[in-house]
Figure (cartoon, rainbow, N blue to C red):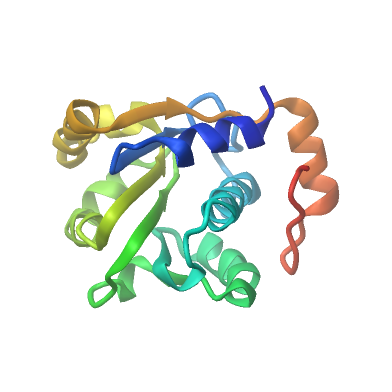
Length: 181
């Protein structure tokens, strides 16, 4: 199944809370930026727009600054607002995508818990969390969120196949991302 099919599954869900689990995505756990995380987020935004969601009603909240900078350059052109976790207090959107991938650093998620808690409350209709199921299960402050998502929402796996990673490496720069058709 290609990434577009997996993204369709996330976006088509009637659930108002969805976790896109990236444990199988094969991310570089030592990198400061995560191009694949940005690419998955980019695909999610594109699919929501394709399904008729107005770009101005979508907000993306990035927990890690390096990824925020990359995605902001790319999504601002689509009228989708991208916020760092520090600046999301006054943001309310119909659809919020929160990207909180940093698989090797549970302690930073615990430190950012109050900000993450605020970010989770920013969506009116649909909340999509991109993150590591394992990290949510093991992070003291996030365990309850994980259980709540499982109880009222959907947890689905999103992985990058090797050919998709190669495509991303070739076609996704800090200035432009290209969709897989």
